[in-house]
Length: 170
Image (tube, rainbow, N blue to C red; front, side):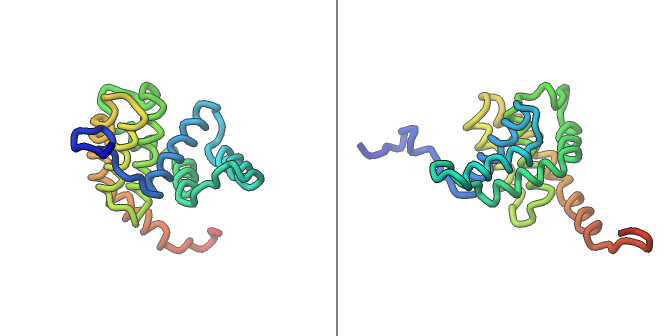
């Protein structure tokens, strides 16, 4: 039977490799938090499983970039998210929303090849797929505020990388 315009199937987007990588990153961050382990440790565990077992899918390189990036910059990412939560704390958010926001904020701050609108749209799509009915608009609202400061954060990070260490620093 062909999809009709009103069919639910016709409203689904084709999922690209980056979308799947983001979703896997959200899954890994969610699992790491649930198991109370370092996300990078969980990532290494998954890569080891994939290396020895043909039935386990390998970890996408972009998934690795996202998980390692969020893990390395977790305090700043979480601080940025929390500063835009109104009448909420990060701990009160559903864990899946925390993971989605962490991936999106990290991309906004660090992924120069990802346009901000794409990072936000992908996060909203993930919230639609994985979370509550209220989550997509909530995620969009928080990220809409983060988008405004993202260029300054990227510029500051670039300036820090471009500054050579002073005498006596290694």
